[in-house]
Amino acid sequence: MPRTTGVRLAASAALLLAMVACSSPTTPSGTAADAPLIVATAGEPDTLNPVLNYGVDGAALIFDGLVGRDERNHLVPALARELPTVSADGRTVTARLRDGVLFHDGAPLTARDVVFTYQAVLDEKVDSTLRSDLDMLASVTAPDDTTVVFTLRYAYAPFLQRLTLGIVPAAAFDGQDVNKAAFNRQPIGTGPYRVTSWTPGDRLVLAANDRYWGGRPTNSGVVVAFVPDDNVRAQRTRAGEFDAVELPPKLASGFDTQPGYRVHKTPTADYRGVMLPMGNPVTGDVAVRRALNVAVDRAAMVNGVLGGAGEPAYGPVPPSSEFAEPSVAGAPTADPAAATALLDAAGWRPGQDGIRVKNGTRAAFSLMYPAADSLRKELALAVTADAKKIGIAVTPEGLTWDAITPRMGSDALIMGYGTPYDPDFVSYKLFHSDFAGQGFFNPGSYASEVTDRALRDGRAEADPARRKAAYATFQRQLATDVPWVFLTYLEHTYVVRDSVNGVVPRVEPHEHDVANSIWWNIHTWTRRS
Image (cartoon, rainbow, N blue to C red; front, side, top):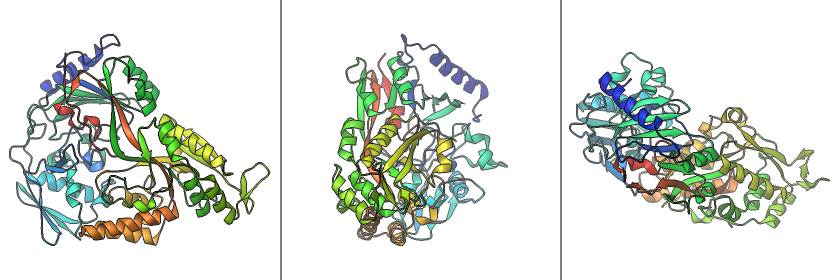
């Protein structure tokens, strides 16, 4: 449990849970102005420890980083009193801490806590997927209680953006294994909310932090309901259970005319695409991948599957980014003739059943998607239909993630990623050969010396023009090799009660469940009674 007074914590938890328990479809929780806000997400975190990858890009509700982001995603000071300074050579970054910041248990924040947090990520004994994100970090030290100095191995232009990582209290881990610490489920942060309970598969209950350095939240707390099935989330929203919920565009559109709700379409850098494994005898053929890339009808997917809530995707750098390379964009509609010509030239000939064959191998493969995700299911079906038109047989399979994971090296998968922050984020792990076959990072084992070099140059170069050139090379090579068939960028669609005030949408990344959703600033939301 967090190190607050036990009686006070238990009372707060009981109050929040009582409010939730007293709700019903006819008297929804959230009708009282001082009741906790209830939001619903599809995903549930594995841990609430930032060191182990919880809320690393900020807006984590429970934690703060040295810096945060405003409604335009611009960096702003958070636990640092001002934005950290960067030396002329780009290799020394100095942060000075804000005075008077307290953890939820009342302990003061010091530079030791910041040093511990970053050292824990770098510790090879800690199972942190963030270690490669901090490859540039040589050391982090604390000359005094309020100063932190980061020394970098090389100039890394977006380093300040890495400082959104939530800071944890060093004392909470004394004598403990970070991987197994009780903190991972019962965390202590400096953020606007403190955890009172977490019921796996059900809900996370948060209470307002009365001593928050940014000012006490304008509401008493937040309950995050975990509801993985899209249709169930929609049904429970209609029953009046939630104040805010993310839904696929088609399901959200049903609330356009329903009194008491508003539908928010939020711009994102969140893309969906087909990951094509290099080890598969069909998808390993670049001609097949290129043919699929021009055979898919992206415009039809945007208009049909997304209900207009998105745009065609041709690569992992969103069109809104200053690093986007316009030459990689293709036609949004399908070009079956061009796709057919590519397959013909590569020796894929139509078989008796219309499915192409080459050297005895049928142009057929499975396309997996998470069964509970209705949007990915519809995209998989659309890809299947487009592929059939050019003689490729795709078998869509809706599976659990446990069933999907061991097959990612050999079977195609509808995947989603994307970030509005910097092109180094996500893409380095997803397309660099160093990460080939490492779980959800480059699961298809794509490898290209040109891509590797461009990604390395992009993260090492400090000069903006050189960085832009490196990422242009990266995007062009990706469009040539087609390890993914990118399909669409999404707009995240949320349904919010019209009695809720303070909603400020901003461009969102792919990861947006508890953290970084439309409720990134929920500590400032209010509700009319």
